[in-house]
Length: 470
Ligand code: BES
Ligand code: ZN
Ligand code: ZN
Image (cartoon, rainbow, N blue to C red; front, side, top):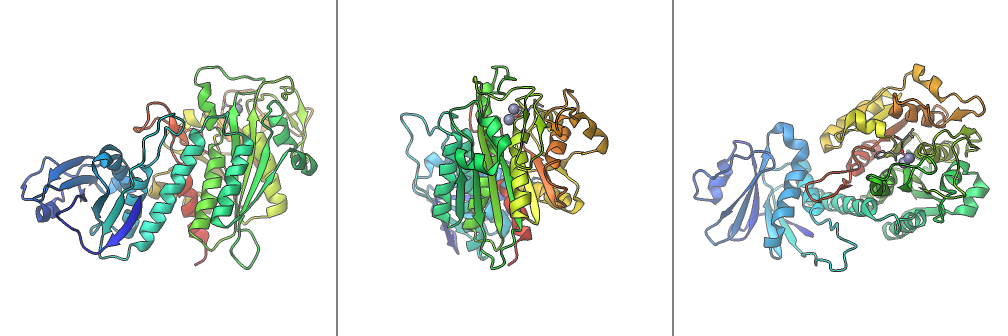
């Protein structure tokens, strides 16, 4: 898609006319139809034909409470009707704010996502020019919306990619290429280097796979002062079989999405570099395949970690917290960021708690929690804070090591996982953990099977924007 800012609408050509619920006066300017079968309800649309035989798509933005989901109305309209658009279409954006214009562009761009990348016969994407008409200065909104939408689509493609192709090394190559194209730094630590530097927890998780683990470090540091403002750490398990504590086979194929946290970290660093935000950020991705093999790590093993703290393995399916432990320790020791945020598809427990509507948020920092919560509502990528009570901690006690990786009880699983991670943050004051297991991958109106949602890109990018200096 190409986006163009135009001052006036050509009413003889096709256009999209956004309408708020029961505010349909503008329709009269463009159509003689007194009462279209349409009231502007959220995520509805109606096609009218104009005098010149042109198409006028009325699209319903709904009420104020729907404002965060404006993007999805454009996504749906484009997904369902763009095959009729030929080479160009206009959007009447006079009554949209700059923020709303950006959301509309993100939605239109997201409709370009091609899920059938691995089909032998692919549909050719339609090259469409979208002219957005507004008297406001919307150049930035268009650019930001397009970059955001494109990054979301790339991240969805990564999460949806099959695990035989998307190995840890593949993620490393993806990051190196993105770094080259968008002018930031990327280092991929491979097996030998991981051994040398002591990423023992990452190595243990990856032991059972021929696809060896990697740790990816991306750095976007435009400021003259070299302090890192924000470090992001992502769980990059390219396939989670559970290891020797093997998972049931039903829906096991979906465990290709266990690198959703890593995808957000990779995408956000790319997007922040594209937007040239004035902030120093580092992304750390800890990637391994949790496989079953004679060499796999076992329940009962005691393993070392980057921090030097030892871990008793109770369940090899609680592998995400192990790779993250090394990532967090690495960040605390070497990056020393002002803010430290990790993202992971970490527990089934958070899915049972919050369903598919919000990520579990864990932090001791109330200011960070409220900022993240506000942004979550604004971009419709919501978070909900869950507790890390002192009393929960006792279940992580190990008699023979410094900590164990699973409590052995079915209670408070997401909180226990968060507190396991906390053990490796050296009490970092501005640390937050987001458990995105329920929101990163799931049912969608645009696919028959579960697929990637793109959750997290806007949430974290907006948080970073808030902390960036102009
Ligand atoms: N990758 C899973 C968590 C998950 C579950 C992600 C559902 C997406 C959808 C994680 O590694 C895992 O297996 N967690 C276990 C932990 C348990 C063994 C302590 C879980 O939640 O059951
Ligand atoms: Zn697991
Ligand atoms: Zn996992």
